[in-house]
Image (cartoon, rainbow, N blue to C red; front, side, top):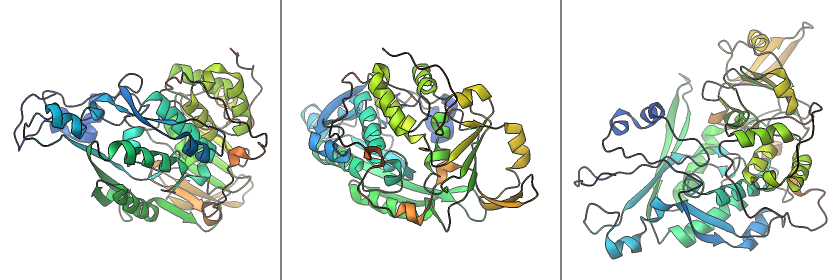
Length: 443
């Protein structure tokens, strides 16, 4: 951390909002932040450790959590922050001027920078998610992912206002608003229609929810693709950024509101080599599989380790098609046996690359001639991270009944473990039926 600075050269500390992700490599830092910052001495970059570096600053009431989970979870949600961020609070620095090396009497400035885009857990990414999840802790992240899964992904995606966001907004108002000199810089990114290159479509700066709401409005125009009819077949390509299904599951998250009942999702993933990047959670994924919410919840009730990793439970739920459509996965570095063991259908990547030449496809509707000589239509997506695809009937369904809670009429709350554990970088994509495998060992 720099010890001296001038008004023209302030002391800067940068914490990438990793959440559960692995630390950024030097090359990744240089690509994202530029050579000048990446080579700065002393090094301004601080690695967030969601297991060790956090403090609980308050709680959202159990009543809010109960409402968000349709009564399935009745306990407070912990608002957690990286300790270094919390040390920048105004009153603390008014008293001792620590954390303000400028010595000018002004409180430290906290700037949260990020992209607003449809998100599978929060509906729309960023704003206070950058604080409470990006630099948050195990308990908060696990429970927030679980709340999102309970509410139902298809009722979250593309909606800036939802029960989970209301919990985070409550925590912002109660614990951040008067404590930090906090400003948000929010971007909306999209593809240039002429070149296909990613470019900035909007920039919003503010210290309250208004700039977030405005960014959400633009993101829905830029990143939301409302299709006139549900595709029977969708083909999604995952580039070199997607080396695991933790990232690759966007191919499901971002298309599930579009694909037709009984349709097929083909995921072409030449760089995918694992399900979860954390060995323990990778093992859980292989044990349980992406077999639909009821089976996953049953496994959670029976498995102590799974119950202690609610974010892993949420990823399993998010990655299941719930039997509504099939998923054919074409990995570059996983075997047929591995793919089928977690519920995917398998297809050879080489065969699919010959059938769907991504270099010649355009994003959107395309046609192919199948093996019977019949022309078929399919929808192609070259990067699922840049948008959300849906048909109007699914996006406009505002029913208050969660898919998660259907059929659960005993009124019982879900008991979750108090000793939540970190499930770093895990997740995956999957289907419904799975190949017969041995049952997981239960504690």
